[in-house]
Image (cartoon, rainbow, N blue to C red; front, side, top):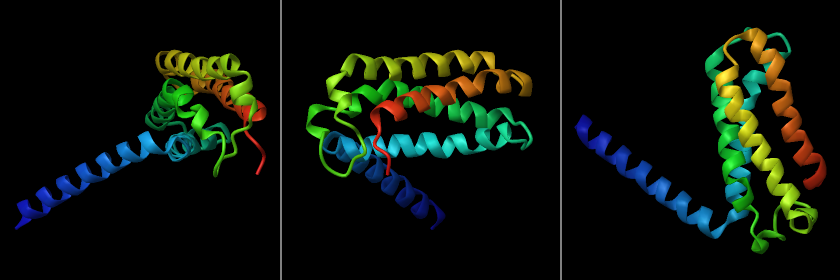
Length: 146
């Protein structure tokens, strides 16, 4: 009986991944919202650490991995077909595409470097704020205030 539940769970997970993949291909706005939300969610613990919560390396590494993924996938999530709809993306993205893409590349590069640099609380506090500035630079230039 237990194995039936495991098989059912595996099948449901596979179906969810397949549906998400189809959605991502057909709805880049939904995909980029999901990736940005994942990055924001992963960044909550490190943000709390910057404000005095105890340091823990694992949540920092999870946030850095989310930043790497967003940096790598970001440019592809803003095709010309996604200029309108339920999005806070500003038209400037498509007008200054090279700068926009460069900001994602910088985020990925900085997050990758931080993965090998951040080993303890001191290195975290020295390096992580720059990554937050990477996020802010893109948001201030390319995201409408809501």
